[in-house]
Image (cartoon, rainbow, N blue to C red):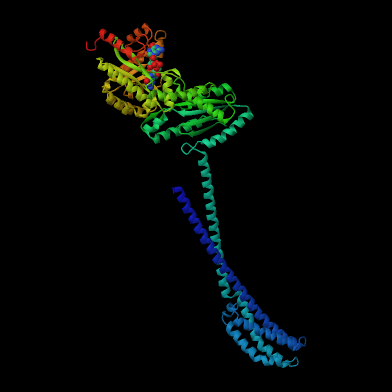
Length: 634
Ligand code: C2E
Ligand code: MG
Ligand code: MG
């Protein structure tokens, strides 16, 4: 039983007990009141009747003397008075009357008198005036007593006591009644509050307080109807955080929760009236915005991305959330909720797996591409298992001496069914369909085995550069995989260079540093790939235990034409120098580029000018040629 249910049960029991005891007491007091008022009434009635009977008997005597009534009437009144006295002396209901002080004695005395008067009454005639007057005189003292008893029954001390009891009981009953009303009210309030809370929980996400999926669906129906009525455009943005699973795994759920809360509040801040946002589950949010202009709606995802960017402070470090956004537009991409959500989802898939974009607007042929990705995933798994993939190797040269320093392993796949598939697409498919780890293990093992083979043939200074898929790096499992592979192949750790793309390390400084440090401790080298295309700040770079930078080929290609590219590359080289990192320039295609890079002090180079990526069998020829030209020992 949860704490909440236990609280409710205790409260219900308390309220029920209180209500039951209030009802019981109220009932008991009501009986007391009934009894007391019945007693007061009975006493009052009986004593009035007694006085009345005495008076009527007296009146009958007077009427007899006056000749207006006969002897029979007097006898009748006499009998009635007698029976009244008998009732008062013996009747159960008359007990309170005879219990009054002096009443019983007076009644006994009167009955004794009646016994004595009995023969006189039956012998009395209207002519016997003397007898009548005597009887009236004797009766007058009893008339006086009956009067007193009657008055006492209405105003005597006992009556006041009884009235006090009624007053007390009334007061108590009012308190019980008020208590009953109060506890009933409290119970009602609790039930209403609980109901409202349950309703809120059914329609909201507990963590962020945003509407949940059910709530969103209901809102969306209304939103679509409104957009149709007002002829407005809608942008439906499906927002998914990049690498969120890894944040949760490596930094813990508390940090993950904090990120989700901040993201939720940032999304809320950017909403206009009528727009809404919901959390559909995990790290998936949906934002729906109204627009009057189609173009503006199509461009709006940039604003969502901007709203999300910005560092989140954590207890030990900072983290910049990055998201992928897929957008569908109403009415262009559909008029029903199902169509719009499915299209936004498809666009999001593309945003997530195309490194060039963080957000994509749905395009009709995306559905086909998505289907292709699903088919590719099935084929890729088989290809990994059946060793259908290959690695090609591109030499990385020392620019000053010209000898080969290392070989970058690059993935190739020629599928019998789908033809040639580029490495970026393979990686995207693998990451999206949960094959990244398997693929990564295959690449690492294949490249290390190949290098082991070359080491065996005497090229034991040679290194191999292996690209690591961002997802694997973030998950923190890489250290174990690398250690196991090195052990299996017997290669020295220093022969392995792991290339990680620049923005992989952006999520969080603390965990990036931890992951990288663990790898460096193994003895492997780390190169930051495609440097300059991500968002690493220089201060961030300083904290990363990285020993190589690879300048992205987009900077190198501009070297011969753009003075600013030269300055930028120069700055990167100087920076790397001060951080004791070596720089590799990627994509050298022209001799001028190579020359310029050498002038700027770049140590390593890679590009079609120097050598294209090639199958493993061709590498040996290059190595032999290299060995003839240059001996590392000399
Ligand atoms: P990258 O790691 O930056 O690799 C360099 C890319 O530049 C390679 O493309 C290479 O063929 C290409 N390249 C080399 N020299 C030149 C040049 O002079 N001009 C031009 N235009 N391009 C040049 P590739 O093989 O298509 O690979 C593309 C990307 O795919 C790689 O970029 C890397 O990020 C990823 N990748 C490739 N193989 C793997 C792998 O086994 N695992 C992972 N995770 N990613 C891989
Ligand atoms: Mg690379
Ligand atoms: Mg690169």
